[in-house]
Amino acid sequence: MKKGVYFSYIQKNKKEYLLFAYNRGYHFYTNFGHLYSFSAAYYPYMWVEVIAADILKKFDKQGMRNSQFAERYRQSILTLGGSKDASQLIEDFLLRPFKFDAFIDRLNGAS
Figure 1 (cartoon, helix red, strand yellow):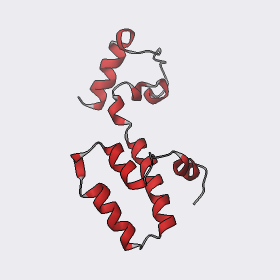
Figure 2 (cartoon, one colour; figure 1 turned 120 degrees about the horizontal axis):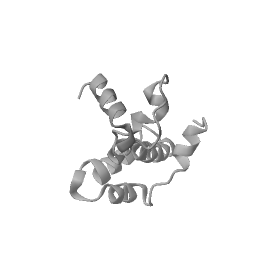
Figure 3 (cartoon, one colour; figure 1 turned 90 degrees about the vertical axis):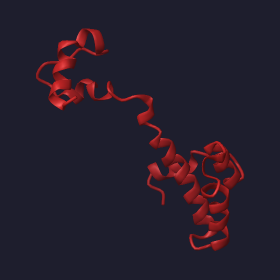
């Protein structure tokens, strides 16, 4: 559906589909309309950020050029691919469940 057609459709059917009233004269995205067409499947990238920050912190501690540690990562995660649940692969590599700490540190500007 083309962008203009989508907006027209929403405006015509706003009472049926919108949780918030459409305010004339305002941009569509200020009415939370940009969220209506996304499913929860759009947001897992944030989990990827959390997990990647945790793994990167572990690499920082071990040394980014530590070949033995990199090989453990390859064997624990990359080689196994989808043979196990992703959270289990991460836990096997980190030797613990992933944590939010490194991600929160990144959000707060820590290196």
